[in-house]
Amino acid sequence: MSSDFRPVWQRHASAIFSGFLGDWLEERNNPLALPMGIFHGLTPLDCQAPRLDAPGSTLCLSIHGLMELESVWTFPGQSDVSYGSLLNGTSGDVTPLTLRYNTGRPITRNGEDLANMLETLVAAWPVPVERVILMGHSMGGLLIRSACHHGQAQNHCWLSHLTDCVYLGSPHDGSWLAKGAKATADLLNRAPRDYLRVVGEVIDVRSEGIRNLSRGEVVPADQGEPPLVPGTRHFVVCGLLARSRTHPVNALFGDALVHESSARGHERTGWKLAGVATFPGVDHIRLAHHPDVARQLVEWLL
Image 1 (cartoon, rainbow, N blue to C red):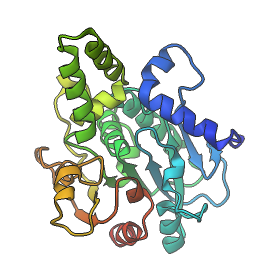
Image 2: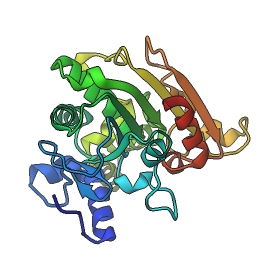
Image 3: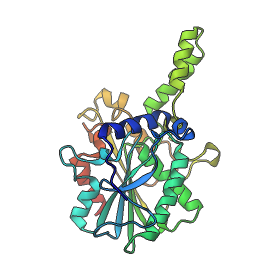
Image 4: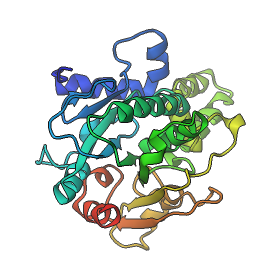
């Protein structure tokens, strides 16, 4: 398949619009609604017949968050460096892959599509797959949990190769910012002034993906809370705005978008994590491309 040569601004515009209104855009077949695809570098892969040089037996798939693109994983000034490439540089048998998807769609629908895509890709991989590593930044971590749930429900074979899941700044208990948007919209919608209710309605016009973030939802509410997939190591990475662990700004805003407690999944039940690391002074976005985080991931995964 050919590379994506659209201008950078156009790709980022699509990501932002998809985040805000992705489900609405998809219903209207609007080209701004990003299709889901797996990339190797800049090249999209055909999951039914993946073609690439020197495929490794370990697949490391990095999944971006809300309104992001796969470029969030790239280290500043180093276009060919990411967590996946650093893992490959250490072991030599890791193929770094990234996912691009419409972040405004419901997380459970994206999770089901990702599970099916992984099932196809692993079965068609040019060499036998020994190991699958999933990394998710922000919403991407929730998408991992959703894909695992759907994969289990459908008895997918790719789960037998899944060794590690890494959640970087993922709002497992919901994002304070998304919760704030919902609370503000609810308050304004009850306001006595018409112009205030209009503002509330405008805020309320947000995608289902954003609504899922406010509650940390990975499956429909009537299905309950899925456990972490067993037989797999689960790691959590948290960020904090201030370098001092006890600085009050950390308690108020966490990494700017997600509180540390939510990233750790404190409200989740029955979780057993293989490792947790917190990085004071590393904000939400930089969790996806920071050298200190990279060193921790290499220590955990190799």
